[in-house]
Image (cartoon, rainbow, N blue to C red; front, side):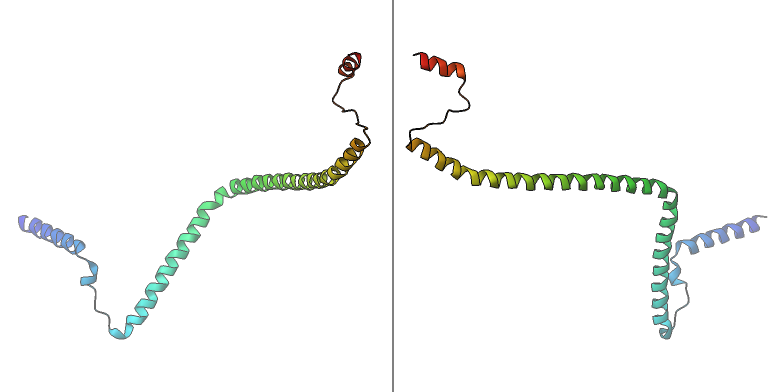
Length: 140
């Protein structure tokens, strides 16, 4: 019985030692003729693993598809609102520019009319002077 236990323990120790050693030292040598095929095979294996990872990620995202579509829909409506606001703002800016052009064209006309009236000693009443203030000046 002791001999049997000793052989089992030796086998267990031998198996453990084999598992701890790197596998590449125990593999059969590959002839040089097949090296390029082995390189190509490794490239194919890497490509397969990468595609497998992307496919698995796609499959994992399928349950979240509805939530993602809702988020995209909300983002689209927000973008639509922002586009409308931007268009309104652009229209307001264009109107403001036109008003500013009209005002800048009217200023020289007003100044020339005012200087002409001063030349004739006709001074227009200022719109911000109240009638009460004008009556107190006339009473003095």
